Length: 172
Image (cartoon, rainbow, N blue to C red; front, side, top):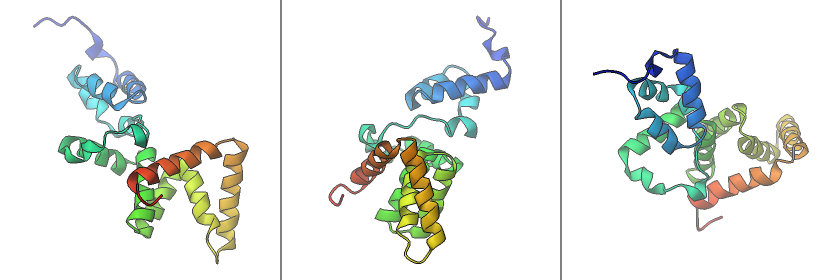
């Protein structure tokens, strides 16, 4: 069969850049991109791309994906490779809903290290409520003031509140 395009001859880093650009738009766009050809499918499944996938806000997500094994595997893989937004959501659930403090704390720190502002906010709140550790309180206050200076507190609060209200609807 004759090929109508030479796109498959593009270097892998170009394909990767395209896949990242598509992934930052939406999950649906990434899926459509991956269905275009074998190279796109392979590149779209790389950790670098999955770490950048645009995850919809909790109130916009269709939670029926939990019942679909393919969709569930996709989100689990994104969490495993360290997608900051999904790590943050899972960390809040581990900390406050499942009460698995060690796992939730590690996930929250990882999401904050990856630059997610909402995770930094939640981490600063956790550090501020520690009674015995004055160094942790200072670190929490420093993070909080940095977010405040960048005018990020309202968005961070909203993000935390959205995750918790959807995960724990009758309690928050």
